[in-house]
Structure formats: structure tokens, C-alpha cells
Image (cartoon, rainbow, N blue to C red; front, side, top):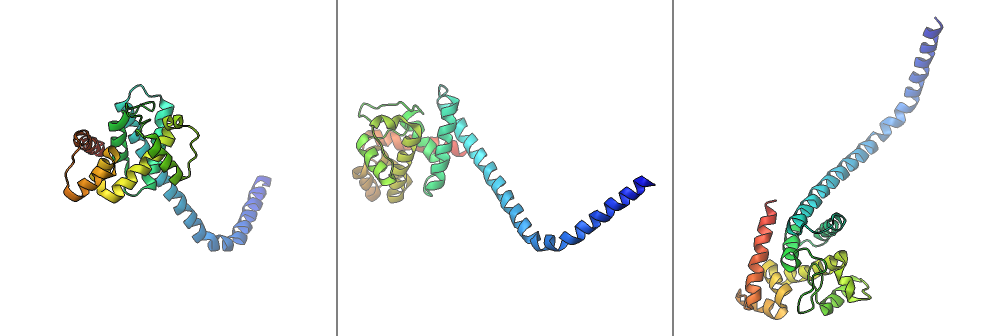
Length: 210
């Protein structure tokens, strides 16, 4: 009997609680639904980000099996960020360019003096860093993968924006003189660039299928 009374009293208090707060609950239903929708959208975005980053990591590891996992993840996150920043770039084009330029070797140094993943010349890097508000105290910092990708994507985006994708690649490899020639004639003149552009396009198409 005592247990029954206790259960009855508990049930009675619960009913009072529900009645008192039901009005406020109704008022907040829309707000709660909006919050749930926002959370759901965030989950979808996070899932999409994870899928994209995993794809980039697969590309990096396939092209350079010696690279450390922590650097792979750092590179993938930065490429994802730049992909969102520049509407005229995408991860496949960025990855294809890096594969062609350095084979994902962050310490790559060309005979001409281009450095890092995206093979930036120091004078070009100085201009790009100033444009982006990035302080570079030494050109050794061009071997930093994140900095190199930030600067390289800026330069690639500028070229693609003015010359189109293939013209932007001509600009990236041979400079504005030959990019302007390509824009006017559709002809790629420098021998190195004649191989460079189709090679990147090939990687680009390959990565699109992944």
C-alpha cells in the first residue's frame, strides 16, 4: 500500500511538472527544431569534410609513400581549406599540380631555386606573402607545407582566374608572358610547358575518378 501511495504521488508530481512546462515547451518547439537542423547540417558538413580529406590523404600516400602520417594529415587539411577559399580551384587540380611540381616532397628544390611542395620561387613567394598578409622571415619557410600550399594556391588561383585552367597552368610553369601568348593563340610554346600542362591535366582527370 505504501509503495502504491509513493508511486501515485510521484506520478502526480510528474503530471504537475509536465503541465507547468508544457506551455514553454510549445513556444520553444520551433527553436529546438531549428537547433536540431543546424546540428544535422553541421554533421553532414563534417562528414563531407572527412570524405574529402581522406581522398587527399590517399592521393598523397599513393604518390609519396615516404611521407609521415602527421604531415599527410596537415597537408590534406590545408588543401581542403584552400579548396574552400578559392572558387576556381578544387582539390583535384591542387593535388595534380603538387604531384607534378614536387611529388609531394616538401623539401624539393629545383635547379632554378623553386622550393617546397608547389615549387615557389622566392621573389614570387614574397609577392604572394605580402598579398596574403603572411610574414616570412626566411625563405626556408617555403619548405613549410602549410605556408607553401597557401602561397601556391593563391598563385594558381590568380592564374586560373585570368587565363582559365590550362592558361593558369601555363602561367604557373612559364610565367605571364607565355600565358598571355596562350590566351591569344591557344598555343603552348615552351617545351617544358608543353609536357607540364598535359601531365597535370592527366593527374587531374585521374584524381577526379577517385
